[in-house]
Amino acid sequence: MAKATAEQLKIINKFAKEPLTEENALVHGFRMIGTRLIEDRYLKIDKSLLDVYLQDVKNGDVVQIADHSMGGIKSLFKITLPFGRFFDGELTEEGGETHLDGYMYMKANQKTYVEPLTTDDIDEQLDAGTLHDSSVGIAWDISECSICGNDIRDYQNCPHYPGQTYKVKGTDYLCYIIAKPAAQNSKAYMAENSLVGVGAYPDAGHLAREGLAEKPKYRKVNDMLELKLIPQEEPVFCLFSANHTEILTRSDYKPDAAKLHSLYHKMYTEGLPDGMSMRQLTQRHTEAVEKLIMHQDHYLEDALDGNLPGHLKAKSLRKEDHKMDALIAEIFSKANIDPAQIDKANEQGFVMKDGAQWFIVNTILEPIADKKETDEKLAKAEAKIAELEPLAKDGEAFRKEVIEAAIADGVRAQGNDFSAETWKNTFATMTIQAIRDIGKTFKAQAEAEIPAGRKTVPGNLNKQPFTRLPDEAYGIK
Picture 1: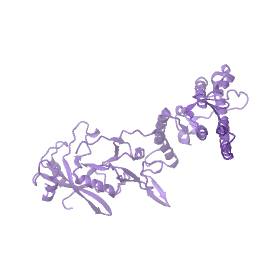
Picture 2 (picture 1 turned 90 degrees about the vertical axis):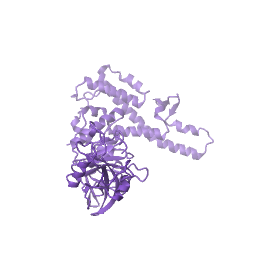
Picture 3 (picture 1 turned 180 degrees about the horizontal axis):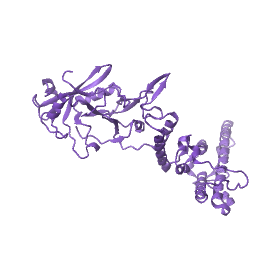
Picture 4 (picture 1 turned 60 degrees about the vertical axis):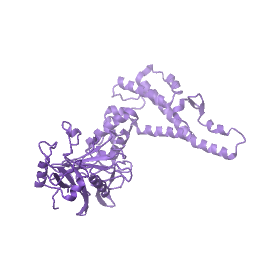
């Protein structure tokens, strides 16, 4: 029986509601966690995080349970109650690493939820060494990349993935996560220590003598890769077990589709994370695009997009469209125009929703109407005109292309019944987006009525052949 010493009892009885004695206080020490790299999890605990966990241990905030069953999914059909509590600990330097050793007490001869074991049974098995391995449930704030030093979840500044090897100045380095607490308002803590069949931390286990309030519910993250998708402000909770590491987060977050889309394209161009196949990447990318198309536009970029199903390609836009959209946005920005306030376009420029006419060129001159304006202001206005004129011409050319494309789709859809001139006059008073929307309607109608094998361009019969590219043209060879 692992009895408590007199010094230990003084500390234990600060937590016990009813004072314990040498006869009924059972004490065991555990090596809980340390700074040694957990190689198959690509995770390293920083010394600064051990300082936080040590304080949790000394404060009596860490409980003893079994197999991480904290009253959540794992213990859906049973009640989980701790049968021990940690009351003291220390940091130990050994083998060039720092380890957290904690000391737990139990009251003798008490039933536990690990039926039919009592605390005496657990005490005897720990003494005998048949129960040895332990594992912890911990939370941290910062998941620092070992390669670049940025948070692994800052996907814009950190292109690395845990488990991958990267060459830096001619030397190969393994990417792993360095778990740290935040400098201020840290949410890092240690919740529990579990008795398990096989522990995750290489040095974790029961120490021979010689040598809680309700816990929050968590959402499981599928793998270490998805750690990049958890918002940086969210603390990460981790349960170590024999076969894998479960990454959990408190929030019921939903990964942003645009962020996922960007991340998957980086994987395609810069290399897949360890353990992921191209087939898995393609499947995840397809799911992200489906969500993206529901709320905003999706632009086809590279061969990864070429693997999308046909119905998603049909709803996607070409990258050239994206460039033209950006050009139009630049025109509006330079001219200080709010596109949302435009009612329609005409030959002079735009008619705003309040009825005002905005002239593409002349409006720039209106503030200079007074003949007494200085030459300096006139020169500025002329410079502004010179800056906007090329953009305005590009915009007019783009508008013409959009109208011609919509007319062509209308001819394909309705044949000789389509009144091209009438529609051309109608389009002249409409916004570019409205024209594109109508063009999409014509295109959908044409595709529904005309077989995909058609080889000529409507309105261009007997002139130039047109070959329809199959979806496979976008695929990976």
